[in-house]
Amino acid sequence: MLDTRDLLYALDLMGTASFAFSGALRSLQRRPDIVGMIILATATAIGGGIIRDSVLLNRPAATLRDMNYLLVVLGSVLVTALFPGGLLRRERVFLYFDGVGLGIFSAIGAAIAWKEGMNPVSVVFAACLTGAGGGVIRDVLLGQMPVVLYREVYVSAVAAGAVAMMIVRALGGGEQAGFLVAMSTTMILRLLALYYNWSLPRIMGPPQPPSEPPSPAPPPA
Image (cartoon, rainbow, N blue to C red):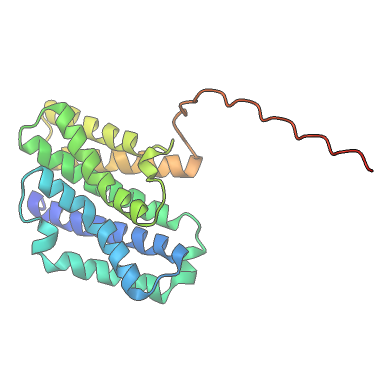
C-alpha cells in the first residue's frame, strides 16, 4: 500500500492544481494579464495550505518550502492561458475544479488535526479553514462575496467529510481509510450540490417597507 505521507503529498499537489485552475479560470472574468492570473491562481492554490500550516503550527508552510507547488500552479496557469475559450465554454468547469480541491484540502486539514489529538470541533474547524481558505482569498481579491457565505452546500460538505472521517477513525479505521472517506464525502456532496443545485435555506431578514407610489404627474397647463 502507498505510504500515507506519499499519498497525502500526491493529493496535496492535486488539490493545489485544482484550486490553481479554479483561480485562473475565475480571473478570466476580469481579463487579466499573465501576471495577474498567476497572482490569483497562486493565492487560491496555496492560501488554504498556508492557513492550514499556520493553524497547525507547521512552519514554514509546506507550500513555501517545496518548489513543486509553485510549478504545479504555473503549469495550471499556462494551460488556462493557452486554452481559455475551451475551458470557459464549460460553464461550471471552475466550480468542479474548486470542488475537487475542496475535498482534498479539507481532508488533509482534518487528518492532520486528528493526528495532533485535537477535539472533534477543532478537527471540523481545521478542515473548514483548510478547504475554504483558498476560495475565500480568491473571491476577496476579485471583490466578490466569498462562496462560503452563500446558501450553497460548501462548508457543510466539509463538515460532513470531517465528521465521517472521525467516525471511521473512532471505529478503528486506519489513517488512509479515514482520509479517503473525508475526501470522497466532501467532494461527492459538493459536486452533487453543483449538479442538482442543492442549497441551504436562506435566513430571511425583516420585510422591506413598501416603496412609496410615484407622485402623480401635474395636470397639463
